[in-house]
Length: 304
View 1: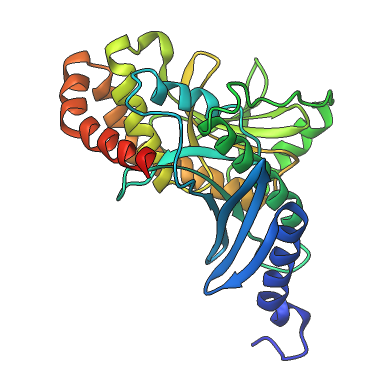
View 2: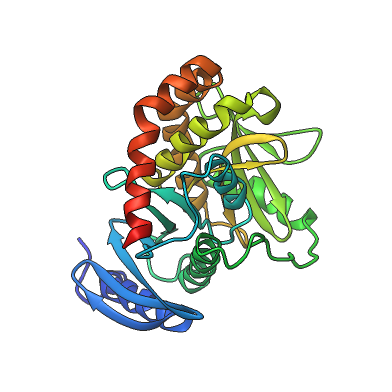
């Protein structure tokens, strides 16, 4: 039993204060509410956002009332996946499974004990990702990628192998660099040091294997799946369709473990569907059954 004077027993309250303080640094208008906070991010105008506590997660989202990007545009869903790959702080563009409306989301893994992890830095990274995602939705920019600082990855890579072992997911070094993590699924995770941070990804398909007729339905499926997954996001980068998570600095063992677990869930949930949607005929059927509802709901959002 934890004694009343044990500092660890105060962590739930300290955690909420830490999150509140971190939001005040990265956002404005921070107001506590049941289960989380409301806040705003400034990007020409105030963008209302919400942060919700869910066990050991902080889930952040920006749900703009109207967006100028149109899912009715055939190439837009695929471009959303390409844009996801450029967003910092695990920001992602997704579609609400219930309303089929576009929004931006990001997740932060909360440490179990006070003094572990860097919550303020992760919240700041997430807010940057959300802000850039919504700027893209508003057609304010087509290129959200930030020029990464030049950093050496050698030392980080060595520490990363140790962190993966501590997380309970030991990796096997690859000749081309990075670690290969056996997820117990068909697709392994690849973990690598990149620009001073860490990148976790699971390949779902090679872009060369995606027929043009499959791009839109596949992307619509994945951005819907992305809304259901914590921490990881669907993306298109370096010739691959992937599920990925990125950390701007060396992640904790808990963060790595959550990223691997989320990749497992994503592969188990979506890999078979991805393979099916590579068939142009099946993709056309999927689009006929589901694409109309998504695009009609998006039209309603744009008219608000």
